[in-house]
Each structure stands twice: as structure tokens, then as C-alpha cells.
Image (cartoon, rainbow, N blue to C red; front, side, top):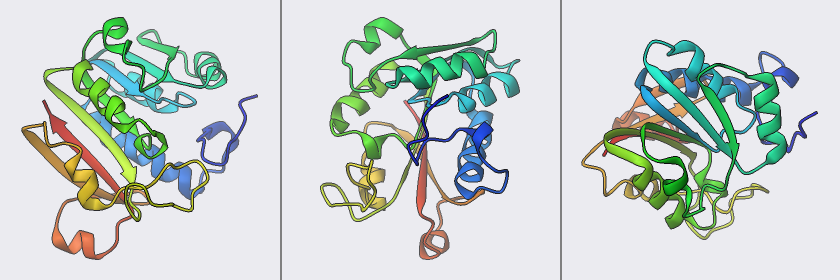
Amino acid sequence: MLKDTGERIIPENMKILNGLLIEHIARYHFAKEYAYGRVLDFASGSGYGSHIIAKSRVNHVEAVIGIDIDPDAVKYAKATYYHPCSTFLVGDVTDQTLPDKLGQFDCIISFETIEHVKEEAKFMKNIYEMLKPGGTLILSTPFGEGRGKPSGQEFHVHQLTVQEFKELFADYPDKNFFYQKGALIQPEHPAVIEKNFPLGIAICKK
């Protein structure tokens, strides 16, 4: 049995109307339309998101690699979300040897990860090095008071402001921002920001 940390999404243990589950599932269904070729699900947790990509994009995806730091989560993913084109591996998103070990990807997805990462620069460097030229990055995070400020969330290092989030992608020539509230995801627009959407999603081309 995979331990529920309070933040971990384990669909099999959650009710269908659970807001956290709906939010996370919606994000992967939104992202799947951008997934192609060799895909990395960076911090894949229990593996449900990798499975959504593998199953729904079978004619567009060559392989889906899920990486997570928790061996129990990887074990659970392997047992629960088997798919012929999926592989789940234990790994740290800040491990600077990962680009050599894993190679490059056409698409990298990392949802609700960066707020947990102290070594943010190493995480973003790994993503950039592992993304092929012309590849697509899809990354999300909840907004908060800003870098270095307490978020009030037990497992979050901090939560970035909207501006800090957007500044993460300065090296990407083509980027679009979306904002999420529950299952609703909308493209960047002044009215959207004013409505206080609590989560941001960036879609960037290298």
C-alpha cells in the first residue's frame, strides 16, 4: 500500500468528487494534447499521469518515462499502471547525472514539483538539458507569497508569485501561460489573473 502523504494523488484511494483529484486529472488531460515522441513525466508520483499520456496518446508517443524520488511510489506505479510504452524509475529531479543517464526527450511534463525543490536551479537545468531542441515543456505550480517566503504548506519549500513563475522560462523563445482553478484551465488574460486562479501552467518550446 502506497502511503498517502496528504498531497500524493492516489486515484484508487480517492472519491471521484475529490477536488484535488479532479484538478490533477484535468491537468494531465490538458497536457496530453501536447505530448508526443519520447515523453518524460518528471516527478511522476503514483504513475496515473504517465498512464493517461501513454494510453490516450498511443499513436503519438514512443515512450513515457516516469521518474520519482520515492521508491514506494515507483513500485506502486509499476504494479498499478503498467503499459507497454511506459517505464517508471527512481530518481531525484536535481540529480545532475540524469541527462547522461536518460538522454533527451521530445516532451517533458512536470506538475506540482518545483514548489517541493530546494535546488530549483538544478531542477530547471536538468529539464533544459534533457529537452530536445524544438521540444515542449509543460510545467505547473501553485502560486503563493514568493521565493523564500513560508507558504503554509508542510511539503512546499515556497510558492512562487506569478511573475517569478514566468521568469523561470526566460531561456525558452516560445512560451504560453495558462491558469487553473479546479478543472478549469484558461489561457493568460488580464481578467483571468484578476479572478485569482491559484495555479499556473507554462507550455514552452525550446
